[in-house]
Amino acid sequence: MRKVTTVSAILLCAWIAACGSGQPLRVTTIQLGSGLNEDHTVSTFTTTFMPDDTIYLSVHTSGVGNGTISVRWTYAGRVIDEPKKEVSYRIDAATDFRLLSPAGFPPGDYAAEVLLNGQSAGTRTFSVQKQR
Image 1: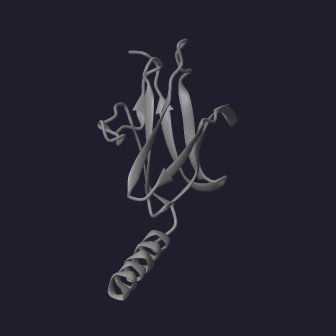
Image 2: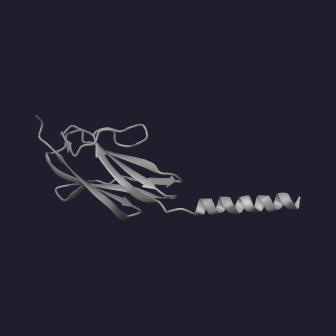
Image 3: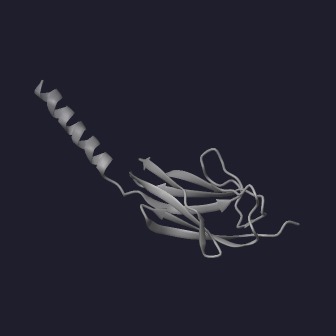
């Protein structure tokens, strides 16, 4: 019985160490494009869009933890949307966001700033062109 208890204690300590070890959750890559894959990564990379396009952004994270990922979408210095997603990951993951406008986007330069728990993790710029 003592041998089983010792083995159980060792396994429990190893499991606790594995869950608590490793790097904290962090943003590793930000992708921007015109389509998404099933795993929430961008399928078609671009930084140029048409007014009626849906703009996709994928935030790749690694590490273990939970937090809030948000994207601050801006146009002409004004925030036009700031969606947030609560996440909890134990493995590398991708979290997707989309920006769309039923009335169409005005042509010009835009930015998407990604934040993890309120701290900036990077910005991607893109433009919307006039219709052809």
